[in-house]
Amino acid sequence: MSDTTLLGTLLDRISTRQARVGVIGLGYVGLPLAVEFARQGFEVTGFDVDPAKAAQINAGGSYIPDVAEAEVAAVVRAGKLQATTDMGRLGAMDAIDICVPTPLRKTKDPDLSYVVKAVEAVTAAVKRGQLIILESTTYPGTTDEVVQPMLEAKGLEADVDFFLAFSPERVDPGNQRFTTKNIPKIVGGVGELSTRAACALYATTVDHVVPVSSTRVAEMVKLLENTFRAVNIGLVNEIALMCHKMDIDVWEVIDAAKTKPFGFMAFYPGPGLGGHCIPIDPFYLSWKAKQSGFEARFIELAGQVNGAMPEYVVQRISDALNSVKKPVNGSRIHLLGMAYKRDVSDMRESPALDVLELLLRRGAAMSYSDPYVAELTHDGRVMTSIDPASALAQQPDCTVICTDHTVFDYDALVDSGALVVDTRNALKDRKSPGIFRL
Ligand SMILES: NC(=O)c1ccc[n+]([C@@H]2O[C@H](COP(=O)([O-])OP(=O)(O)OC[C@H]3O[C@@H](n4cnc5c(N)ncnc54)[C@H](O)[C@@H]3O)[C@@H](O)[C@H]2O)c1
Image (tube, rainbow, N blue to C red; front, side):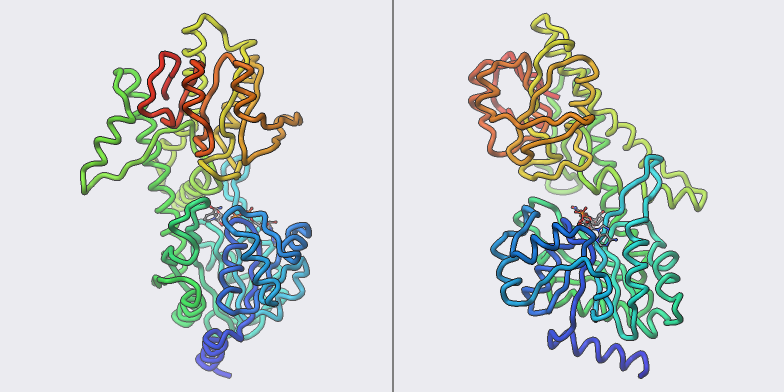
């Protein structure tokens, strides 16, 4: 069969929903994607190394807040979604989407070990006519330098015998307005046929597909987007420190600046970067740039400014306690919100953990409230979330708003006259001598 016939067969199977879709890595990215394909009528198999996740999905459950249990249950009941740890079943798939983690090593170098493991499993099963797409965020060149040679090791050729593409995931956990379905999808194949195949698959589930000329462009698009955020957050964090020195309210400045209808986009200061993307992805880019002899100065600088924010928060806590003649050492300090952003449970890289660590090191007695994080382990020690009202009743020496979850009762906090450090402007327009803003 020629390559165009292989493509024709695959496109047919996609348009008639006969194509069997596999999603490797059923986390924040993979599970919503698997459910979306299943809802569009495909028979979807989710692959994960974690048997507990597979079991929960097969029982119609969900562990990702943005994916409703009812949605999972409906597609599982309809026989459209099942999950497994058996990678041997990859050979039965027509299309495979890889959504495994891409963290950093301690040295801040890319850790591609999860991608390599997943691609090894795909290589063992790769067959003619299959479409393989990498969605994990990574540096430009990963798909054609790392993934493609592995997949071709058994003698099949990409864009001829099978199709290979990169398509970055842009999902924003907790965002109700923009979801997997209505966020435009960038797609770049290793060749024209691969781009067409991947575009056809996504067009069944995503409202708008944007083809680009190569996998490298697609990889770079994602890193530009996240570097743009990291650098702008770094800039606004520095402006916040500057404004503090000059006794100007940075939040009021940003609110006024954003009335400009063009040429300005509001970013907000905070206790530091968090989540699986913004603190990590730019370093994938600077690492790769370094391989080409290029130093990514903005990325390094933003990393330094953003990385120093937890220390600055501790400085503000110290200022607040000092105003009532108390030291950090021995004070009872309560953190409100431990997740990395509002109304989500994701703790990855959360700056609240850095603030906790720095305060513990200075001898503070720490507690926290987070309705989304019932328990956390820090330095081998388990901490349990306290109901915010009980925490307030215990009158801590200082309360720190690390993450501005909507459910917190900010009026009660201010009315109590508590000493508060607000890192998120959650107490905007509320006045009290006890409020210390970032
Ligand atoms: N979370 C986000 O908001 C977001 C947004 C855009 C892009 N991304 C990118 O998407 C990728 C996945 O991120 P995530 O947040 O979904 O991660 P996650 O940790 O939530 O999920 C990854 C899943 O992959 C599984 N896994 C690990 N190795 C595996 C293997 N070899 N085979 C099968 N399963 C394996 C894990 O058990 C886990 O369930 C990363 O590259 C990330 O940078 C994440």
